[in-house]
Image (cartoon, rainbow, N blue to C red; front, top):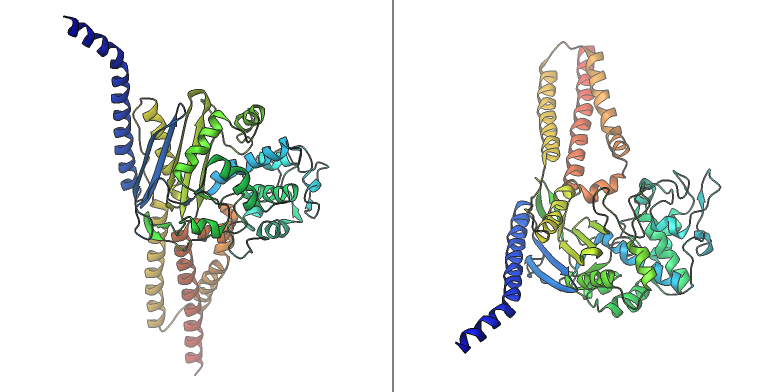
Length: 471
């Protein structure tokens, strides 16, 4: 009888723990199945996920391979894209608390050589850069970001100098416009205020104290920690990239890290530490005003629960990180493939992770490549029509010369203006199209080639027929 009573007591003590352990195993299995389905559906070669809950990394798993065939692990280096921005914002808050800069100071206080044109009497402040309300347009910012032609030591200042003289599209502080150049300028301000290179400051003041030993803010360090080329997406399928890296880009998008390291950053953002005060941490996590969508280095959902999150992308990598302080929950997902037209589908992966953690059913969005297929269809159809038209022109003895000349000339004009019209309508530079929509860029170039060849041959054939008739 005594053994039965003792056994019953032990069961009552340990039953809740066993139930929680079983629940955790079920959640882990559900996440694992969901992630495998997502990677297969979206043709992602490799990924790594870490979930933090109540101070512990409750889920850590990696799948697939990197471009050299090595297995992805929790320590594998990925470019983290704009997830770099919250780290840069943390650095700026540290300098502000140390009295080395003030968030509401005009930026010329720290980089007096940077100028800008504005119809407003307002100055751009450090806070405006952090909140993406500087008035510098995204189009102007794209002219100086995602470039490889800069020196590591002076790249940030050089890129900022190339942007100097820019005409603002809005008065500072009035309009939100997401623009990586804002964080490029923050990098230049950090270097001026701290007296260190951006990479050295991040390494000694943030990465090392947080134990983020696989994280880097410069190319040489990133490569030494295992960074390699990722994959670009062509019609939804992965194609090995070229390891594009902008030496001036760490403040806004070219830091490299691992899921294990970013889990440490999540824990810091949830619980704080020695880097900033509780008040400083609170400012970083505070949502912006109701009519704004971006705080100090973080996005916040437009509706529902307001929590800090950030997505990130380079031409070959994609990342996403969120924290929910009230629920003591956070997660980071790193992947080695990207395409701008697949971005919405990728968002459903992390949304699915949040759903699983809440005990809800996850769902994956469809990855739509119809734009690429339609563009390919237009190219093939136009090529076929052009060939048939030229054959018809060549065989005819009597033709309406003005009509054919007009057709050829119009084709040449369209070929000449197609790229400017395309970039103007999308509001991005052609170089950016080539980086983040490589298949679309290639197909548009093919379309231009078809139009140009058709126009040129039409004019030549008409001229030849006219010459033959004169003889």
